[in-house]
Image (cartoon, rainbow, N blue to C red; front, side, top):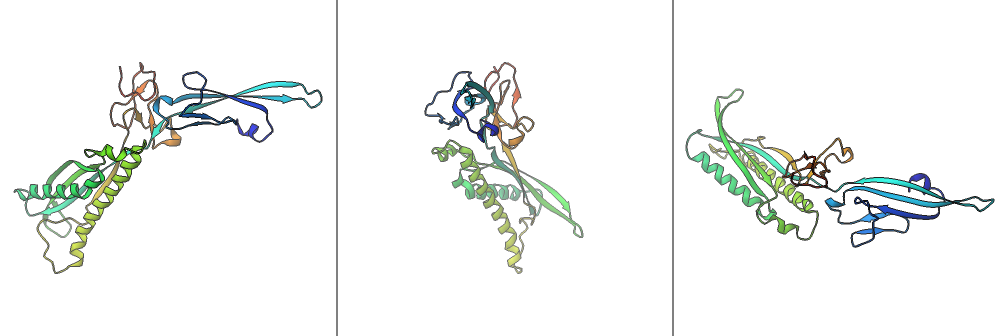
Length: 272
């Protein structure tokens, strides 16, 4: 019931819930209706999305005549399945190098990737799309320096990642926790590279070394197939991946649902 009715006496209240399939909801292992009209749904899945209607029936009784009158009030609710977005990180870092030609640049790149892979392997995270380019950089009051501009992505979907989610439905809780740990470990690794030279002034700086303050990281969100972000439609959950509504679908890990007028269901992953 609404706040107005909740704050006053209600005589002989009864409640009738209608689900998205326009049929009365019956109690089962997933759906529970309390005596006071509350609807409780657990393990809410995509097909359960849609319009839910509650009809409250109650009596008014005239004090003088005891005449009874049945009153009905209808309440409509739109419910949507949603997930937290899957996090991944785009990272960039720079290293000095003696020359832009030669095999040592590629060797550094491969060794660095192997170190980072080993650093996060126990978290079911991986380094993907690694790349590098060599540029010469003019710094204020210095000559030209050769630097490797290295970029890569980190995601929580290394082979076997689903094994970590066997005990939970909300797998993104696990994967997002892991990717945040991976981000912190990689940040700490590059921070330690910079600290090496601050704590030992007598150490000879090698020709190839980490450029201090060059580490950059940007979070990138993605949604599971059948889900997408829509700030206009779901402004109260703008960062959520909400189930694609009828007439839309999402076939991959994009963050938006695409139009397909032939779809009549929630959570479509393809357009027939």
